[in-house]
Length: 101
Image (cartoon, rainbow, N blue to C red; front, side):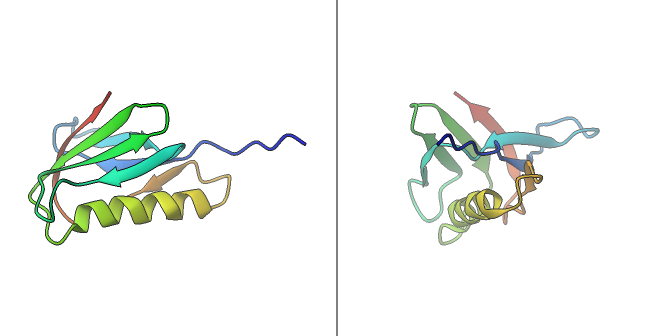
């Protein structure tokens, strides 16, 4: 049988976005892993199975708190009702920008 899943997106506030719409949507589908180079990194990368990435630039993390917050949010978003397409993320540090590549 065919099984379809609803696309889910993290909704992340970033300081480089316009005040009228400070949010960037980042896909929660086909995530391979969430990566930070160190416990105090200033960016966290979401890697996707197709080779694309979403890099979240932020104030220095503490004990991988940003990586963990994004990873936990991806799991929570994927578990939420199919009617909840966007999942608002509370990132523990200020996000300065998000680059999709």
